[in-house]
Amino acid sequence: MSIESKGKVAFIGLGVMGYPMAGYLQQKGYQVCVYNRTASKAQAWVKQYAGRSATSPALAAADAELVFICVGNDDDVRSVVYGDNGVLATMPRGGVLTDHTTASAELARELSEACKAKQIGFLDAPVSGGQAGAEKGVLTVMLGGQPSAFDKAQAAIMSYARCAKLLGPAGSGQLAKMVNQICIAGVVQGLAEALSFAQNAGLDGAAVVEVISQGAASSWQMQNRSQTMLDGKYDFGFAVDWMRKDLAIALNEARKNGSHLPLTALVDQFYSEVQQMGGGRWDTSSLLARLKR
Image (cartoon, rainbow, N blue to C red):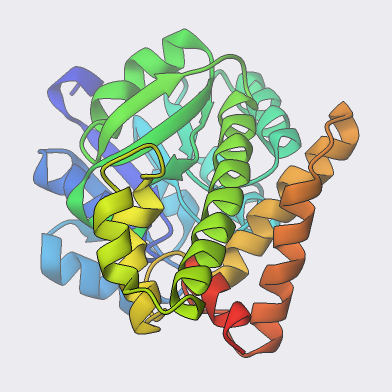
């Protein structure tokens, strides 16, 4: 069965993002085999979506034309790619490995070379849209890799994305995700300061947002997070711990390419204060909580 006719795929990593992403692939007609480090999560996924699960990444990837990874960090990716139990041990020639993990550009280039040696295509493909975007199947995917690999994987990726764009060679997707996180850090901090100012000035924060969201101040964060910020609710969405991981990657890359990111570095420190407040698992909009201490 060819990729075009929706053949066998593997999905490695069933966290808050990977679980629904793999589900969309199954619902779109792909024959999905999943692997998750915590087996009970894979079993729950199989019960919900009627796919299959495997006891190792290698077994999940055996005969899979497309393999997707969505795990935690660089080391987690390496642990499911390399070795006898890794996906490269069993992936067939001509297949495509797509890594949705937000990781370093250096890792992406490393994996590209490792895949090339086995005649396997590779795409680094971090996503934006958060848990809600994954659950709704409307993620934005930033990709790096060869056009031929993108052509093979694009239809499957669009099962859970509303936008997927190839931006250049391996590593380009990860670099674009760094740009994304740099933008978000500044916007969320600005929104937190604005809401804090509104409250301190005696204004109705929600009413102010209703007005200014119709103009140039509007943003995704304002439209989707302002009310929960005003309500002091931060127990959802993209966690501060994850954001700090992403910003560390961006700041490290900035040192390599000579970029100056003073605002990003400052907001990263603000997030460290949120962690010290016990908010490591709070949503990134919890920057307001820091201002209200």
